[in-house]
Image (cartoon, rainbow, N blue to C red; front, side, top):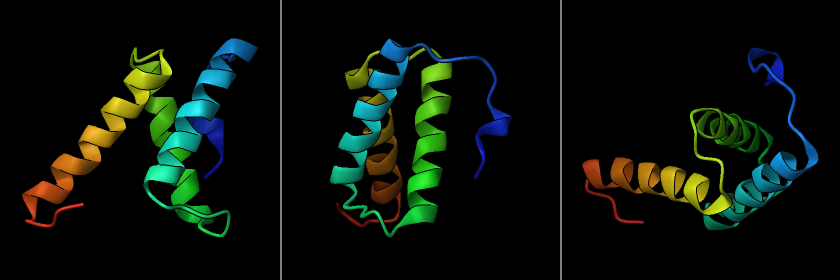
Length: 79
């Protein structure tokens, strides 16, 4: 998924935050380098959450980690 849907320019500090949150979520979700579609979807989620105001790594991780847990809890599957 290309990032043409997203606007703006990220400075080096912002890119570092995005990368750390992305890496942490990849580890949590057990995504390997081969899981390209899932990694691209996750990257899009990370950027979206950042653009909505979660500008600290922990906030981004918490937002997406909670979202994932709430989805899994809805269908009775525990993670």
